[in-house]
Image 1 (cartoon, one colour):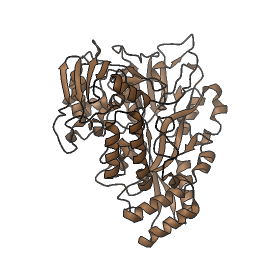
Image 2: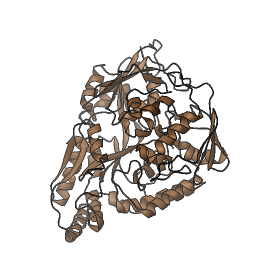
Image 3: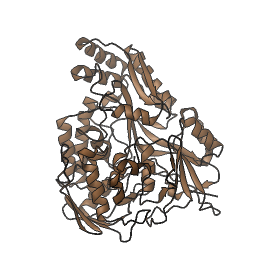
Image 4: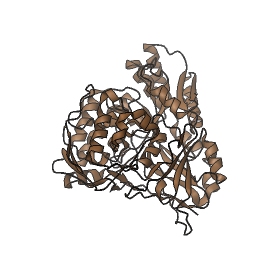
Length: 539
């Protein structure tokens, strides 16, 4: 999903900066000299799963909006470089206790001051188990955090109006790098009176604000206008942004070609082989920190214990990734070799056990037969996905590959909208019993972000409810390292275990593909595939 940050002490800066992107370009065009700074920029989006509360938003539909109306301690530019936003400085002497100073005279869009308490209260709210926030686990490094507790974090202390300290349970050199993520945004005092109501009409401190109390038209669009109280580096160069919630990516692309929408960050399957010719210099196709997979939950029939392990490995080896990425995606995807992204420092394509990600029909059949010897297969292998995104073609291709190799019934299982799909996946009262589409769009530029939130026991985005003490121990060890190389080695060791257990089946790494309309200028897509909306102009 998202990102932001800078200003740490020498030890943390050295480690954190080494975990930033190793190479990611951005598409751009020369700003038009006749740009209209009052023009509204329209873009594609999807109905957010939850009310727009930073600690309860961890999907891209809501994330792009929350990032536009809130400002954290830092933000990242198009290349992943961290830049101070609300923070004046973030310093540490030991990578365990951090002193954070807020810039003076910062306010929310309603005039309330953004101060140390705004951050501390928001983090305390997000960390409490009783509040059931999806981003709760991001506060786990802070002293006093306990998954089962409902008491405040002892590691947060307000020093004065513009200063607070954060004490972690153990040293963690890349902690400052995480502070740009949505979960760490501040909240105004009135949010805590009725958080659900606040989430429908949030008051933020970012570059934009809701145009009115009725700006969020559910399942249609949301209208944002510039927040004139914002003084940070993301000052809007336009008159606002309207996110249009499209049910199908094809409709958004048709609107782009007709200049009825200004910028989109998703090209439909039907146009993936033609969009660069269709749009010419207005086409975007660049590497990004996006990883695609699917998950088979621990409660799914035939996917538990030794039988489940064999079946996961068999299905993975039954998927012809090179052919699918070539035929379906026209080379805009790269077959996965791990669980992270090639644009991040720490990536390697030579991990032990990653042969399970190589197409091998003969071995897949043998593994499936071994599983059948434990318990004969019955039923249909289904792969659930949201039909309002460009997923049907690849899901059908994956299902057909599994069907042809293993000789079983396999098919996609579409759900109309992303919000409905995610609700099925996260419903704790009735765990989903099919495989389901998963993946990751980075929150901050580090390999840890592709691993800990998804595969640590009880983590916020651990949709398959995977748990392995050895993996947890390596994650903890990596987080406490003060040297980047040591941390990367720990994360790689954890991945070796993940490649054996396959809590998710890695598929491929994604380029960001998108485009913009004629008359639109200064378009940049960030390293995490999200356009820098504040910079976009049009004549």
